[in-house]
Amino acid sequence: MDLKEQNWKNFTVNHLRDWHGIWTRYSPEGEVKESFQSLRSFRSNPEQTEIYHTNRYIYADGRIEEKNWQYDKQSMRGFFFEQGAAVLSGKQLESGAVLPHELLLKHEDIRHSVALIYDSNGSLMRAVSIREDAAGFPSKYWSKEINLLPERNLSGNWQGTAVTMTPDLKVSEPIATQIHWPLAGNKMFFFPDGISLSCPTKVSIGTSFNIAANWLVTDSQLQQLRVNYDNYGAFSGLTLELFHL
Image 1 (cartoon, helix red, strand yellow):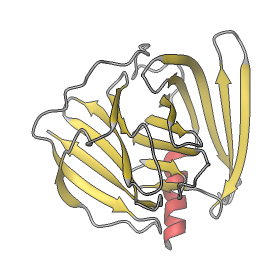
Image 2 (cartoon, one colour):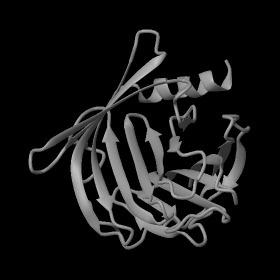
Image 3 (tube, one colour):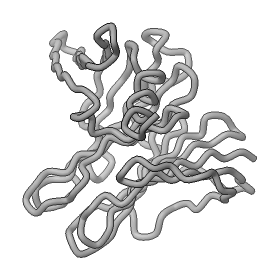
Image 4 (cartoon, one colour):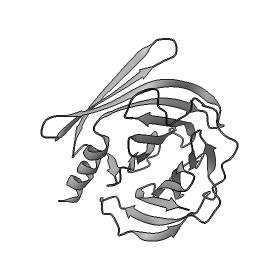
């Protein structure tokens, strides 16, 4: 199976279903801007060569907003690991262009992801926590809390394995690794339900940067995704780390 085919299969096997969730948007300072119910639905044609993607947002005042997309293997801009973790990301930081990111972690029928939007000047506009459950809404696996936590203790002898995917979709062999957290120079967001984010508040061509998110799935199980950009503003790879105590 070629690499694009494998990436597509990793997506369809793990994500081709309905995901019921809660989105909470935060200012760069960590203030809650809004929180609302969501449904992200992924359908395909019988051959699974085309995806029909619908986002439905249900707001507290009763408004419902819906957005639709359609894509195939060639237009897919996501990077998907076999385990289900994924990154939806721009491949190149361009001067004057908005750069969106979503880092997505998955365990069985639960997804947690963080989304980031940087404005045309490279400044962080907002961070978003997205908690989703394929079983329905509300979920027994996440709380109703929306405010950030002041801190989260991830100390301990976390041991695990890491695999790295390059921009051309090649995935390395697993290697043993230990947790490195937090990432130097980045701002931290401690979302409810075990989700943490480390990201720069400003990105620019000429300075390499990385963005990472992790999920404390249980007290002894942690997933972490890290996305890297080089000095030229080009996406240079992502690493999935699975840790245990």
